[in-house]
Length: 313
Ligand code: NDP
Image 1 (cartoon, rainbow, N blue to C red):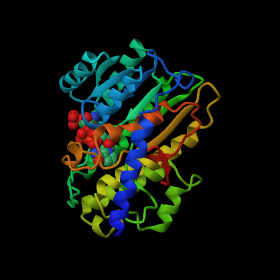
Image 2: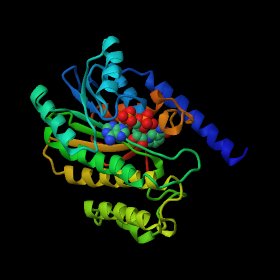
Image 3: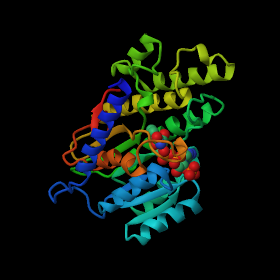
Image 4: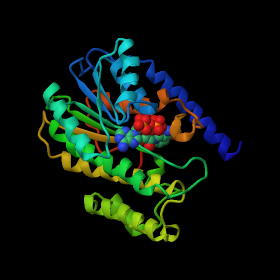
C-alpha cells in the first residue's frame, strides 16, 4: 500500500469513528447549557459557519447567526427558524470596527452577554495549486485581525458561569508551526512563536506584518514563508498562536469566570472556499467546533484540534 493509500485509509477510519461519536447523545448531567445559553457564530450565513449554527441550535442553545450581508443572513436564519430552532440574526462584518461595536451594543441590550463565541468567518482566494498573494492583506485582515477583534470585543460580554464561557476559532492545519511541510523556514521565529514565554501579540503581529511588507515589495517568495496557500497559512498560523497566547492570558481568571479558548481544523471541506472540492461535508467540518463549544467539564484551553482529537500546533 502506498503512503497516499495508507493516509486515505486512516482518514476513512477516523471519519467512521467521528460519525459514530456523533450518534452518542449528551446525557442530562453533561448538558451544562440550556435555551438561555447564547452562542455567537461569525460568517454563519453559509458553509461551515451555517452548519455550526445549525448543530448548536440543534442541541437546544440560542444561536446568534451573524452575517456581513444582512439579507443573506436573514434567508439563512429563516431556514433554521422554520426548522424550529432558536435562532436570532444580526449583521456583523469582522473587518469593520463600527459593525463589531454595533453588534456588541445590540448583544448587551438584548441578551446582556454571551456564553460561546465561534470565530468562523474567513476568506481564501486560492484554489488548487494557485498561490497568488494578490489578496494577502484582506486574508490576514479577515482571518487573523478579524478573529482577534472579535475575541477582544466579546470577552467583556462573556457571562460568568460554573461551566465557563468558550471561544472556538476555525483554523487550519496549514497554519501549523511545526508541520513537516508548509512551515516557516526560520527556526528562531518558529521557536519564539512556539514558546509561551516568548510569544506575544507584538510578535504575532510583527510576523504577519513582515510577510505583508514583503508581499508589497515583491520579495515574499524568498522570505521562508509556508509554501502552500502562503497568505492563508500565515493568517491561520497567527490565529493558532493567538489562541495559545489568549489561553495563557485568560488562565488568570477566577473560578466561575473562566473563559476557555481553543481552535480546530475542520478538514478539507466541500464549501465555496474550496470550490466544493473538499473530501468531507460542511456537517462533518462543523462537528469538532460544536463538540469543543459544548465540552462538558471543560478544563481544556489553548489547544488545537482536528476530528475531536488534540493535534500539535
Ligand atoms: P465559505 O467561503 O463557505 O464561508 C466563509 C464565511 O465567512 C461566509 O459566511 C462569509 O460571508 C464569511 N466572511 C468572510 N469575510 C467576512 C467578514 N469580513 N465578516 C464576516 N463574515 C465574513 O467557507 P468555509 O465555510 O469553508 O469556511 C469557514 C471557515 O473554515 C473559515 O475560517 C475557513 O478559513 C475555515 N476552513 C475551511 C476549510 C475548508 O476546507 N473549507 C479548511 C480549513 C479551514 P459571505 O457569504 O458574505 O462571503
